[in-house]
Amino acid sequence: MRAARSVFWAHRYCNKLSTHKRFFGSNIVRANTTLQNHQGQTAVDIARHFKSKATVNILNSQKLLTSVNYPTVNYFSHAPLNRRADKRKDKTWLNEQMKNSQTKYIIFSKLKPLATKLSGENRFRLAVINYEKISEILGEEMEHIKNIVFLGVEESLLMPDSDGQVKQTNDDCAWFAVDVGEIDNASNKFLEACPDTLYLTPRPGFLQVHMEDATILAQARPILEWHQFNKFCPRCASEVSMEEGGYKQSCSNTECASNKRILNVSYPRMDPVGIMLVISQDGTECLLGRKPTFPAGMYSCLAGYMEPGESIEDAVRREVLEESGIHVGLVEYHSSQFWPYPAQLMIGCLAHATSDRVIVDKEELEDAQWFSMDIVRQACIKVVDHSKPPSLWFPPRQAIARQLIEHWVDLGSSRL
Image (cartoon, rainbow, N blue to C red):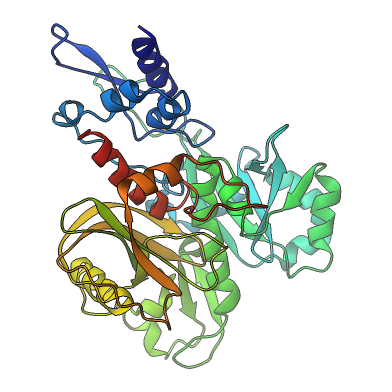
């Protein structure tokens, strides 16, 4: 009964439940074990916390996985806004929305977002301000704001009409982002006008915001940074202007080649990165590495930038071989997420090794070694005290590396 109650409450913590046929009669409530609560815990994490091995085994049961494979939704991937790309070229609509009293702005200063700390927690929410408040704070300096990025709309919750269709309305709340860091003393004015706010530093601040805010942050910051560091055309050095709500730059020189055909320099840069958990040939160990810049004791998945002409699979095999000397055969896709440091698409994979001998590239890694599943499992459940870090620990759950590691451990637990 204790195990059954633990399963029930673990399921309740998952928030979303679905029903599937199983052996206890015709139906059973089944938990989505990839979902997380506000502390970043899954149902499996909660069961481990209460030391209920039976519950862990039930939640990880292969029988529960056969009918539905839930996708992993990573920290920066919750997409609370409809980006409404169809509105980006509509300058009239954008200008109307910018001054709409319902519109929400998030403020940056030199790429650091303005945020409020949640009471009693080391977590934050993005500070949201309307146009009237911004005008009041900046006064005449409003005219110095050049780049305002359209993020999307927070759609109204509507019931379907009689024909089953949800109609688009004009009540949807638009979101914009703006960086005031280049306006004299503007950053301090916002701090003074908005009590209990601060500007978040990228690390660890971006990993401490509410998950939906994290996705908005990951969308806004790279585009603002792109405009901040690309003010002149790379083809002819003329000044560029922002177009399409911030998602395109146009050269002011009408004769420039960039205005005559589509070029990648006209759009925000995003770099694809393969990040992979390498699994040993017998499946009992995984390969983890550490860079010299890592905190003491921290190991993570191997990772590397994709190169032109490469498939994801080829990039994974090349990077693993270059960094560790391990050959990889089968490559399986797991999940992805955008990583705003500064603008990378992390493509998470499981890489199945076809060799065992590790040869570390010391220019890339300080160390790389095989770790048994038991050791990795124990490291996953330890609470890390950064003043006295353990000999082995992993990136936080906000990082896709941690999701890959825990996915492998969960697969192993399901076979116990």
